[in-house]
Structure formats: C-alpha cells, structure tokens
Image (cartoon, rainbow, N blue to C red; front, side, top):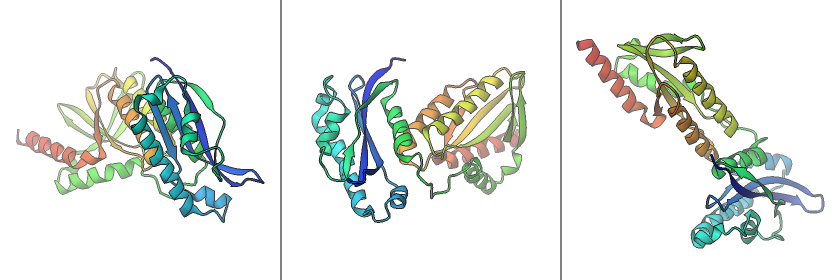
Length: 279
C-alpha cells in the first residue's frame, strides 16, 4: 500500500512554567496526501491529578473539550484548503491554541509516513498520552463477551447442544470451547477487544488470523464464528474496526458477529437447531 506523509504535534499541559513540569494531553495529525486532519485529547485525568494534586481538572476538561470542538469546526470551515501542501500540523495547532496560551503548549513538529493517518493518530495518542494512564474500568474478557450468548441460548433451551471441539491440521491446533455439528462443525469463539492499546488489539487479531491460516489445511470441515466485543476506550474504535476487517479477510471466511447482534445470532442458531432436530 502507498505510504503518505504526515506531521504531528503534541499538546502539553504545563503546570508550572518556571519548573517546566508538564504532561501530554493531546495530539493533532495532518496528512495532506490523504486529505486528513485529526486530533485526540485526554478524557481521563487520573495521572494528571496524581502528578499535580492542585490541578483544576474541571477547567482543564472544559478547555480540552473546547479545543476538540474547535478542530472539528476548523476542518468543516476550511474544507480542501486544509490540505495545502505548504501547511502542516503545527500551522493548524497554533490556530486553535496559540503559542503563548498559558498552561497549554505545543511540542516541536514531528513527521513520518503512514498507510493510514487515522491509525497513526491512534498509535501516537496511545503512546504519547495514555500509555501510563491507570485503568480504573475493568476490561471485559472473552468469557464476558460470550456470556450474553450463553444466557440467550439457555433461554431458548438450546445451550446444551454446544460442546468443546479441537480442530487440528499439520500446522496448528485449536480447541474451541463452543461448537455444534450440523453436517460440518460450527465453531464459536468469543473475542474481547476491550484492550488497552492499539498494538494489543492488532496482536490479538493477528493471532487469530494466524490460527485461520494454520487451520485452513485441516482435513475436518468446519466454519469459524467470532463473537466480538468492542473496546471501552473511544480512541480505540478505529483500531477495533481494522481488526475486524483483518479477521474477516482471513482464510476459511470466518463469520463476524458484533456483540450488538448477539440476540439475533442466538435466535438464528436456535432456529437452525430446531430445524435440524425435526429432520
């Protein structure tokens, strides 16, 4: 895929200008080739309040919310002029937050090339802003994602048809906790992408794509289904969508079932079970 140029700048909260103490609170990224201008800003202030106990979190939250909206307005108002080759992330950043705007300052300009500016913005935000943030919200596991499926199948009185099944080839072997045979094996795997970083989402998707590659030569016929749970962190949604696209393109043409479609999926499975039993 073609790589595109981009520039970026980090927004920093400077608590004490004399002491030089500061923490990163946002990122703006500009790619003229892809007609892209994007920005992400901190929503969690736990690390800031630990570093600076007297920080006015409410005011800072309001300031960053206004800055985020200002970038959205800037993109809509300026249209294609945003993507002039002479402009960069800093030229837009300083239009929203000036160089002498008190406690909020911009870093020096960074640059690089990327296949996806949106994905790079997510990575920069995770690396530069939220990497060391304490997580106060428990993350959902694969079992948590499966639980609504299990509960609905129990209501429909078909949960008992599922069993463990190991699919093996000369290259790989995977045990699926939930499977049902109807001509061929239908194997159901819950996947929680409620993870902490872009990299962890990509790595989990890649691991299961690898299993699909390894099992594509299995002698026993089966069809994989992935019941997927999305991240709780809004900034990871684009990484989640890319992970689903990656899995959907894997060998064996797996079926992707988003968690919001679990009830319809369970109802359909129950209908197929009842139809099979009537034969």
